[in-house]
Length: 393
Ligand code: FEO
Image 1 (cartoon, rainbow, N blue to C red):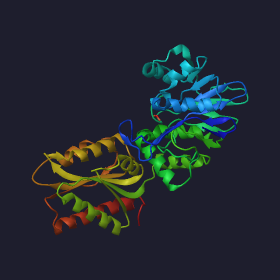
Image 2: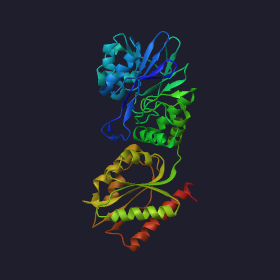
Image 3: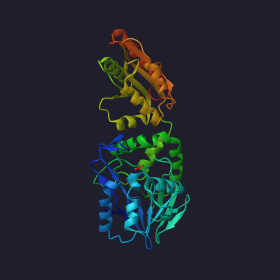
């Protein structure tokens, strides 16, 4: 528990040990469930709750603050890591009303069985007076789910943007450093849950640009007292700009694909292009997702197995397709023993990636000298494409 600004308190919980989120996303740094308590001169507000696993921490933080009454609990998002304790909060503080939007009102009833009588529905840009402080609400859909919204504390210029700008980062530091490490953590978070909704995120950023913001208190990770740091990063990621990188998710059974990938990396490097290989055995998919945010090219690489792609490569293609990266070019390479339809199957698996296909390269068996020459030509094609985007001279 800590005061982050005038009568605004952090009352959330750190989950140092959590290894996965949604049983999907690996958490190398744990996570936090951020909840904030605002003491107004007339009314008190709790912004969100915490994951039910951490209810004791939330309650203990409220007790240490001496909270005897909560007038409102603002629910920015129905996902249970933020809303899961609302039913017990309503039991502990029976006078408390849930404040949220129409869409979330329905979801809270469905997922948490909260009665509609306990919910006060607000419209977009509506305000809620706490006496000397005023909360204003606006909708920022698809910063995870369709009902997600933000709250803005007008007098203190604090934005509570729900999952937007969040990071899975349990740290004892209350405020984020505006450094490369924090940027990587925000980026992987953006990649995993917001990248598929880039067009909506652009509109959400336009709303945020209308506000005068001193501090951003997101629902996960440390708080930003340098609000332009995450805002500018998001603007970059939702733009059409790509970087001079080739992401290569790959798997190799008997070294043929590995030799091809390693040769391609050398050839790309010689041409001034950065390569990011991800061996799909034990790969942290957060890092792979993060690389997909702005890399110009993706090359899926692997062996043909049972007439199709290796399942690990098919899974990587499925993930990339789901995340809808803005990559400009895509290709496939690998090795085969006899026949099969790996290329056709992988091409059919990525309809959401609106990228130009660079002619795939399949090699029979272990690469020989003339096969390596084909990889050099493959690297030349990538160079030509990156040049056409002005990414390399
Ligand atoms: Fe942090 Fe979408 O919940």
